[in-house]
Image (cartoon, rainbow, N blue to C red; front, side, top):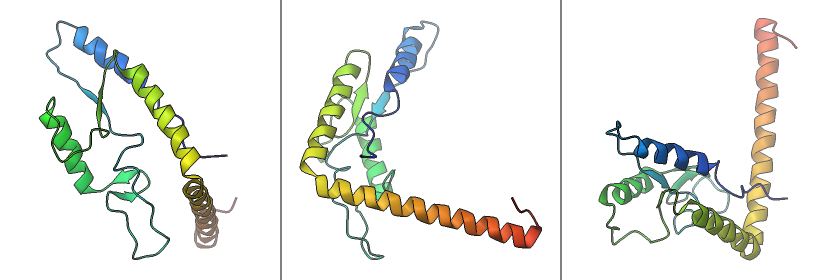
Length: 155
């Protein structure tokens, strides 16, 4: 069983909100909804072996990107509709009611392809997730025991 989500958190609702806001003639707001998730050149960076010295170039950890990638996100959004030359075409999609379904289909297809071609990496990710969960549970137990000893808050 894989822990990788099939699609992002319900983006159709976000697209509907943005489209409704644009349709409101009394609104002077310009809202653009972007999706930088999915399977792209940046998010598909190889995961280094566990070591204190091995870090990823674009991500601090699995869901938080580094400043350098944040700068690229801003570059894509603020140069729209012109795509910066140094940014892969698979990174960043401006979502709207006309492209949301095709975008979600592409994410599902890319996910299936990734799972099929990267089974070792998926296994490594699942093992890492399990280790982190166990470590977190252990630290919670230790904190509860400490509170029990320090403050008599035992449950």
